Length: 368
Length: 123
Image 1 (tube, each protein chain N blue to C red):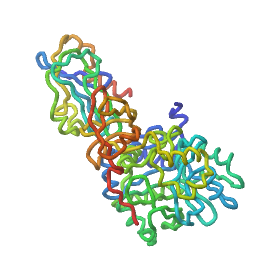
Image 2: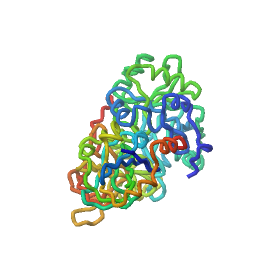
Image 3: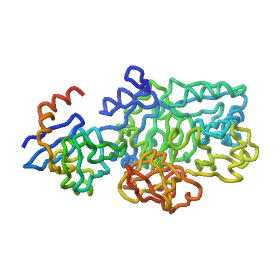
Image 4: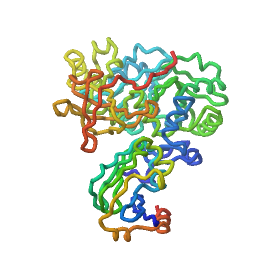
């Protein structure tokens, strides 16, 4: 894939990761920490118990300016951005003409712009897509910014030491704030199922800021390994695995991201397909899958019904450290999507019993 | 008792006709937290280099290959019940299976401790 050491990009925290003893791996063209010496299980549990610091600077940070960037961006996504209040954020997806998903993204509405965060592996394509299709909008790639996530129940207390406004932010809010001597755009959001914050700041200040966070007793560095197990337990999609160009937002269970107005008006790529799927239903749905034994069922595992007919496939699967059991999600034929439905997973030639599970696998603890 | 190693980081130790096999301390450190092991049933016959067990960390599943040919006489129930034992004691209590060897001479092709340590330095 060309992910050789010579061609990998690095984030502003690369030297810090190595100093902390991280095991570095290629990910989306970047050299990233998959785990630190504590290991994935400990990092995962620490995040749910206290606070974990994640470097997500590989993700694309993009600023959209113009007369009405929110209305303009609605031409590419089914999310309702016109109705979004300033200071709030929304999760949505870029769709293609057949309602497949090109990427998922977070859109923050700010006073003078939209601040958009896209996946690392898709960012060049997303930026080109926006530049090609957004009328009267300037698309500015913020390459000089780092992105850190502080996740877990202690995150709010930690950041409150720098700015007392933090507890007043509700989940899904964003604001430009002073954090000690740093100015950052901070959202109360994340990808773990826990309360937490994502912090965008200047790349050349990121290491100092990360060192301050790590000096706080509640905070430990967390790698991509635990990021994946945390989001899987939280039932959150990983682009390129649980959603891609072959899955529609309706099949993926992302109906909640499409408002009544956008369903009625359409006006995004693939709208006719989405409207038809909303009216007539879909043939397959993304569901949680709970294997009954201890064996994890990984991505690509085929799913069968009681008549031994293939009815689906696992798109993310592994071990859930907080659930203390294997957890998975995937697509199954709609007749089998109801929680509790028994399924059979073929793992290394063995039939393993499983059932459809309600997502998330853990109780989300977002700040209201 | 001499412990010998494969390039895939399995170890094997012979006592009489029966050899104990497992994964090296280096292998467990590379895998990270072990959360599941899949062991063969007694009586299963394996060839040298063939998959004899599976070990899974949070992130991924990896095969464990038989360092020598033989018949499985026992799997280690202790690592089934407590997979983290593989991390804590990879080369002792965290063994995987015992094999009744069909050709002890196969062991001669494997690395001894010194050769394995030298091999690790090349990785």
